[in-house]
Image (cartoon, rainbow, N blue to C red; front, side, top):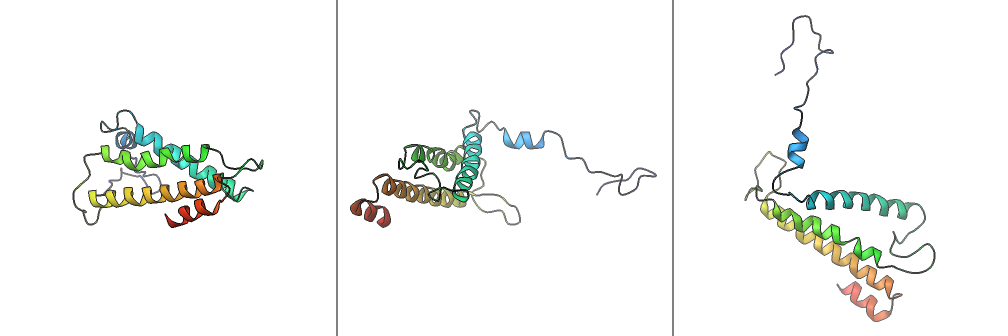
Length: 147
């Protein structure tokens, strides 16, 4: 509960957040090289870039080329930070073993599920890229669809 000063209206009263709170949560001793933060920032920008490409003219979302040259190796290289983001979550040791009801917090089992589903998506995206890169040859396309 916030106390009011004498003569202070509800509009004048402001709750100020603790300074440095977000910095303390973002910059921890568990990620001293900032690998997880860098990957997270890259992934957010990469999602925005791919959606922009897809919405404004390149329906392959960058797997093909607007110039007609076909797929480039930049696509799968950009998937590396996506994989590293999930895997680098393992450096955080303060994750609880079990779910704490009522708190929006990740726990170890949920983190493992998140890593598995992220890797599954990355492998599927890589298979789709391989199919595009090989000009959709029937045997490569079958492999990409089967995986």
